[in-house]
Amino acid sequence: MDGIVAEGLTKVYRSRKSEVRALDGVDLIVEEGTVLGLLGPNGAGKTTTVRILATLLQPDAGTARVAGFDVLHDAQQLRGIIGLSGQYAAVDENLTGRENLWMFGRLYQLSSADARTRAGELLERFEIADAADRLVKTYSGGMRRRLDLASALIGRPRVLFLDEPTTGLDPRGRLGMWDVIRGLVREGATLLMTTQYLEEADALADTIAVVDHGRIIARGTADELKGRVGGERIEVVVHDKADIGRASAVLKRIGAGEIGVDEHLRRLTAVAGDGARSLVQVVRDFDEAAIGIDDIALHRPTLDDVFLALTGHAAELETTNGEENAPAAVAASGRKA
Amino acid sequence: MTVVRIPTRRAGGGASQALRDGLIVAWRNLKRVPRIPELAIFAILQSIMFVLLFAYVFGGAIPLPGGGSYIEYLMPGIFAQTIVFAAATTAISMTSDLSKGIIDRFRSLPMARSAVVSGRALADVVYNAGILVVLMLSGLAVGWRVHSSIPDFLAGVGLLLVFAFAMVWIGVWLGLSVPTVEVTQQLSFTVLFPLTFLSNVFVPTSTLPSWLKPIAEWNPVSALTAATRQLWGNPNPFAATGLPAEHPIALTLIWAVVVVAIFAPLAAWRYHRMSR
Image 1 (cartoon, rainbow over the protein chains, first blue to last red):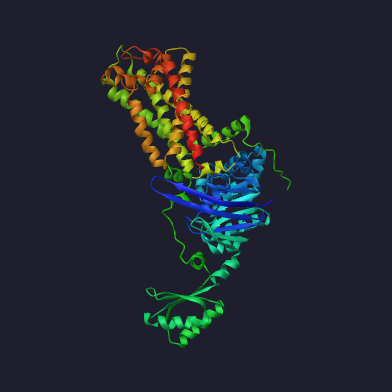
Image 2: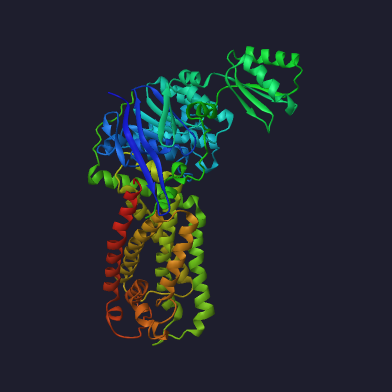
């Protein structure tokens, strides 16, 4: 049976002043035992999608089945086989880590003894055993996030939703979280995760769906998407504004595709067809042509590059769109009739 | 490892699951109380401050029709006021759980839908009972006494807790309707202060202007205060005869039923609306 199948999911948030079309016909398929990365900027509809699939929100139109259960009609059965971990660590600060896990285990309908055993296992596994009996308010951000993920796993869910699991973590915390997620994948969980980072989706997901303005605008493996962007990019800042024209000509000989030019910052970007070798070539050619360089770098395609390639516009950060990332309280009030 | 998952899980769950889940949520809510001691301490200090202020500062200037000790008159009112103000604590806890995503976590679990609210109600009634014990001891220290039998005393306590249960529903509804803890705080006190001051808690209603008297006498807080005064043999003057003066216990129970009948469905409606 398919892990997750969604068709035509539509969600409109209405308030007195405005109408936000958060989802505009989202179709998704996640095969059982695979990982789908939902990639997109803030406000694209990632969290709304997850909230619908995790039975927290009802779609205005469209259908979705998770492990064969309809998100609307079989919601209560579905809750018994899913785990949800959001970008806000939804654990109780005034309980200890162990108490949190025991409580969520009991509410997942485990027996008290099972909940206790399972809590112990997860605390060990996520390296919070030492802090297990401390109040969560003394935890670091990374520890809270791991506890939140552990809470989602307490009932051994078959399908797991992770909403921006690394947002707000420092680089070390992020890598640690990646390891944890890879471990889950090895155990065969079906996983849908959202992220704003192409590299994260690349590292963890089997397939990636790119979301923008409530629609899936591209899907494929990370390599396929990167292929559409054209691989790595060279970014050069020339010393003298007058050299921009000549620099652009040099880059054209080496890279494929358009040369991006920002006159104000004296910055040019080009696709590096050959990676580091292209970079070396550019440095040589600039030297030969006596074009002064202030800065030069090779970077992997980012979400911005993907968006630029797919939509022709950069990924907008819709920070004003409260519904997308706010927890229920804020969302509910924003939509108050 | 052979930890077997139990797949025998009933959908939607039945009464025993609802009870079990409600108790777990209540356990969680009560577990938090000593860990955020500010909340309880502040609630108690605030009440004690009212006692001191009215018993020793204003009390001398407030004549009781029919005589009697002002402190004995005041204490039942303070208990009622504390119970009413506790609705703010309920609301704040609810809003805070919402904004921290705990409610979302609960909603994603295969638990009884009612447990979030029933667990809150149960925990808050127990919490109120604890606060009442501390306040009654403080009352005894400043000269308040119960002059009736133990069953009458317990009936008064029971009435306070029934009313606390009703107030929880206002708190839950408010907590689910308001976006932030700060707003909840402001709004609660804007509503609750007049409710307790336009009553017989601090001054006999006979001292009020005639248009205000019926409002104060029919006020549910007055009914509760008068009922406990009557049950405990504390001074209980009234401006006029009528239902509030003659049957304060019945009126308190009616009010409790009315409040629950209005606010429980409103709270449930709010809770369901979260998924819209």
